[in-house]
Figure 1 (cartoon, rainbow, N blue to C red):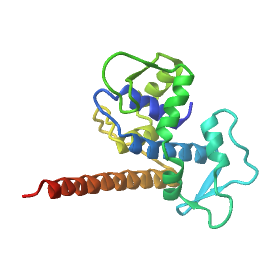
Figure 2 (figure 1 turned 90 degrees about the horizontal axis):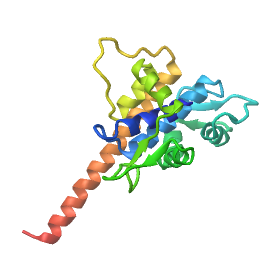
Figure 3 (figure 1 turned 60 degrees about the horizontal axis):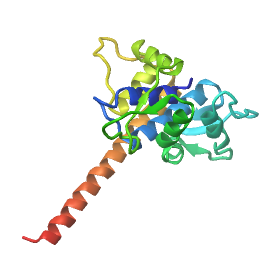
Length: 203
């Protein structure tokens, strides 16, 4: 299992009480993929630019990481982390949902609407679900940090998640900035739409 799949499963697990926006989650999933690529030594960061390691083939273990590897920019000046998040993150949550449904790890249930589609979905008990929840219960720092960015909060802890990898810290910071930027866009559009409605209503 990858960090991105664990994060998606966690978002589905918490969707009743802590709804996660699909755009926010897509950005965080792209960040999770990049963190896994860093951990696999498929890429390194030069400042905020993603530098592919030479002779690294796409991951055969996970199709999403394989796609991510194949899509890397391989020429100087390389791609910035922020650019990667917006490009790779386009509807990524929807892609993960479709994959987990196909694998039988998500199933429809009656009643209500889901933030991930027209019909509410629920997780099927599986090793993948148990693995994701185990990482969450163990307060695995990267997963906790990514979850926090998209609004998923766990039980209060006296210990702050400790990240000792500068590249991972950089990715998490850029993910946070991107999610904040997306929220600012939403708020601006909401204000503009309200102003437009009020204009047509008149005094």
